[in-house]
Image 1 (tube, one colour):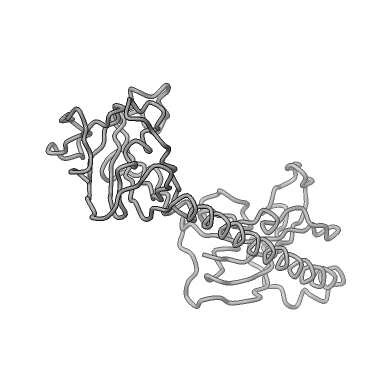
Image 2 (cartoon, helix red, strand yellow):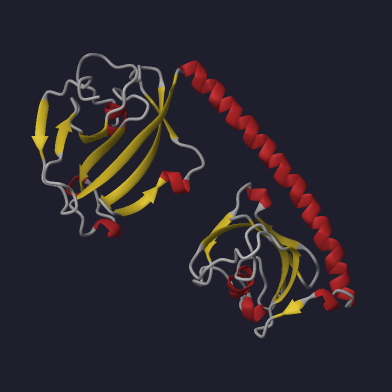
Length: 299
C-alpha cells in the first residue's frame, strides 16, 4: 500500500506513550493522518466499490474502548465514492484512507483528541485516539447489492424462526403456568435460600456455568405470575439480551438464576418481588409483582 499512496506531505508524530517513537504518520490529500500497520498485496478499492472492515477503537496500544469484531455481527461496509482529482473534502477520513486499500491491509487512523468538538469522559487523559481498521473484503456495487439482499433474506428467516420459537415458548409457559396456579408444579420447582424458584428444562453443556462478571447472551420470555400475561420478551426484538453475570446490571433473580445455567441451558425462573423490581412500580411492571421467565442462555 505504501507504493500505491501518493501523499503530498509526510509527518513524524509523537503518539501516546504506548506508541513507538518510530511510527510515521502519513497525511492524505484531505489532511487525515494514518499509519500503515500491514501492507497486503492485491488490487486496491475502486470508486463505486465497498470496503469491508473491522475496526478497533483505542486510546493506547493496549486500551481498547470497543472492537467491532466483538460488538457487530458483520464487518462494516464503507462505500468508496467517485471523486475528482482535486481536494477530496467530500470524503470522510475512513473513505479517504480506504480508497487505496486492498484485502488484508491493516491501517491506523490517528485523531488528536483536541480536534474533537467535545472530549468524552473516556478520553480525558488521551492525546490521540486510534482507529485500527482491518480490510477483510472489497465488493463491486453489484456484488454489494447481492450481499445486502442475502443478508436481508437471512434476517427475515431468522426473524421468522424467532417468532416461531416465541410461539412455542408462550405455549410452554401457558402449560406450566396453569400447573403453577393449581399447585401441581411445585414438586418440580427447586428453590434457593433467597427464594428464587427454578426448573431446568435443558442442562446445556456440562460444567460451563458462567464466572462472576462473565458476559453472557440470553433469550427470555417474561409473564406475570398474577395473570400469566406476557410483559416482555427478547424474541420480538430479534436479538439476545447481553449482560455480565453477578454485577447487578439485571434483577437479582437473573444474577442468581443465570449463575446456575450452563451454556445452552433452558430454564424457567420464578422470581419473587424481592429478587425482581421490589414494591415500586417499574415501567409496565406493578410494584410487588412476582415474575416468571423462560430463559435460554445462548453464550
